[in-house]
Length: 175
Image (cartoon, rainbow, N blue to C red; front, side, top):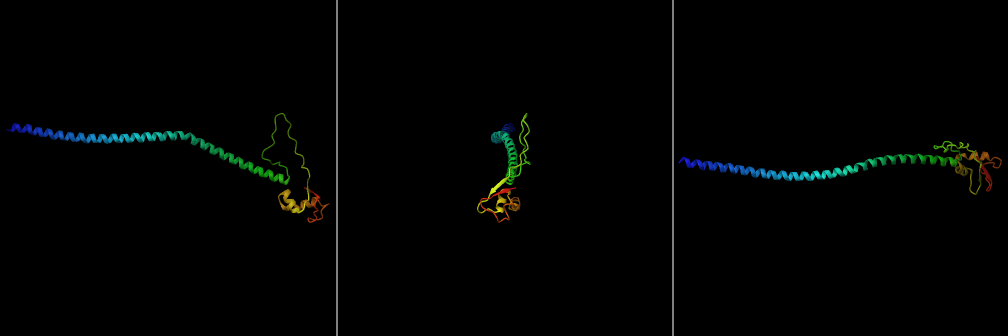
């Protein structure tokens, strides 16, 4: 009777092997599903990163342009500051009545034209005294400082005895 036991054992052994293979298959199938889900997630991340990269590539020329515009703005601001300084200097010279020989920008000359003649000596300035005028106020008006009143007095010695002898309507020379 040993013969019938052998086929039963081989059948039990085959069933055990089949159960192991089925378990392995089930585990492999579950692992395959997990890997597919991970792959889909990675593909979604890849497309999101590709979209970000495209946006960054589009922004790169704009960033370079912004840097260029920033440099141009800085140069323009420097030019503005220099021109503002020159404008203030010219206003001061105009107020003081001196020539602007130290101007930053020379007069333009054109081909075939004669060079500009030297500027004429400034015409003598005069001031008509009004009520409330003092030599100090006149000095501030023409020189920008109250300290040069004595120069006005010296230039007008024939009509002024001192700084308090101002007569309304009299004309003063402003040196």
